[in-house]
Amino acid sequence: MPLTGMKQILPHAVAGGYGVAAFNPVDYNSAKAMVDAAAALDAPVILQTSVKTVKYWGHAACAGWIKELAADTSVPISLHLDHCQDLDVIRGCIDHGWTDVMIDASALPFEENLAMSREVVTMAAAAGMGVEAELGRIVGVEDDIFVDARDAHLTEVDEAVRFCRDLDLAVFAPAIGTAHGYYSGEPNVAFDRIEEIHRRTGKPLALHGGTGLANDVFAKSIARGCAKINISTQLKHAFIDGFAAYHRDNPDDYEPLRVIEAQYEALLAVFMDRIEQFGGGGQGSLILAA
Ligand code: 13P
Image (tube, rainbow, N blue to C red; front, side, top):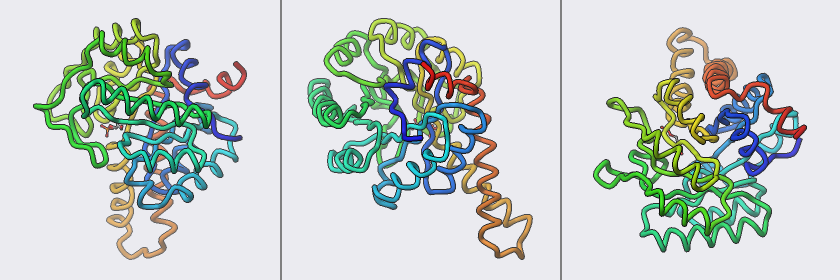
């Protein structure tokens, strides 16, 4: 079936109290494993390309693979762009049929962030697309964006209310104490802040930095309004480890398709596990019927 935007998927997740997994595909094999995991579990899934990935393969290739994979399934699949500061890349996504894009102008002062995010919301709305925007600073490295712990700060609730009132967002990304990449210590997730931001903005929230969080952290965040749960670093590890483990166990096998298949199986297991953990199983057909 055709791709489905986050504006259709995420309100259903909020109402149903579950989270939609958002994974970063890096190639056709990883995108296929994401779509197959969603189809096997009758779950919605968000494929969010990183800017780096789009620049490496090109907009047409990324959109072509993902639209073709979605066309063979009957579950809702969004094609989203993760953290982007480059309006040309966003324009390319609009031209090539992404359903959603994220503008990350969170490094800018509030008014400039708002103005740049507004520009993207206006561009996207004309194409019927949804937008994710960020306020506050999420620590860690994501794509080419690095935020040092000293510069990280949680989103202020009053600013979040104003930001979300001025912008028609599909999903809002606040900084709530999570971090991109693996955690070196125990993350200090601000559950009260999540609850208050969701209650006062009325927006579905994105949980960034999902790799390495404990299952009860996901459950508590989802119960307080996080409807989109981002996982990237865990996929990168499964991607490399799946490939390397096969070669370690079969050092004389130089048939690439068997290595690719082993990598696919490793990725599929991770995606199915995460989708089920967030409660997305069985929700795909319910979204489409709603
Ligand atoms: P992790 O790499 O920590 O899973 O975070 C992913 C993310 O938030 C993508 O925007």
